[in-house]
Amino acid sequence: MRKIGIIRALEVASLILFLAVLSFGQRTAGLKVEKGGKAKPVTAEDSQGKKLTLDQYKGKLVLLDFWATWCPPCIEEIPTVKQLYKKYHKQGFEIIGFALDQDGETVTDFVEEHKMPWRQVLDGARYEGKFSDNYGVRFIPTMILLGPDGKVLDTQARGARLKTLVPEHIKSVTNKRPVVISGHDSPGEKQESNE
Image (cartoon, rainbow, N blue to C red; front, side, top):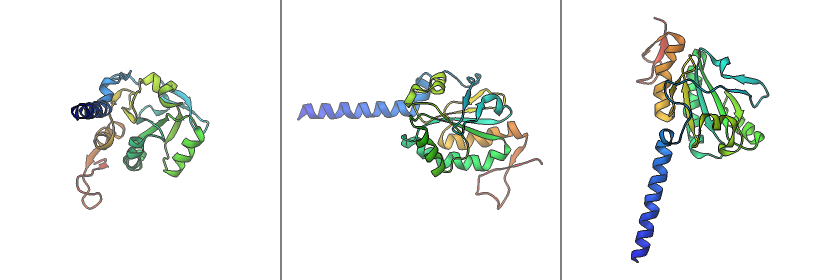
């Protein structure tokens, strides 16, 4: 009976450690970029066969989203990312998805089904892709926010944090100041203005 209790305690401790690594993995996972540093170059063909480079996004606020169709936490992020894209895309917010799937058709079908309008790069199976390796991605979703100068603003730009970061940094692209427009957005949401 005591042996079962010790085994159970070890299982629980292992699970807690695993969850802690997932939650805080970005700082300890060996990302090859850090806040304030320059983004790694990207030159690729997107899922539509068009050339994609980070240079095409100069002057924009860019989210690099390393994800996969087989990753439940990645799928959970999609509604937040779509909402921010819809609200801030015309002001200069862009997203580049790096899908860590083996099958391009699976990614294309998934992107169409979930109505993800931003560009996707097929980055190979699990953490063996060119760009995930170049950035040192070991856990997904990994979301890296880049400023209009190509410098890394944040390496943990997910969920509620992303909801704060995009409105905070979009003014670096638009030179607009955020103001609350009464009756337009829900309380606490901001709309950009030139006033």
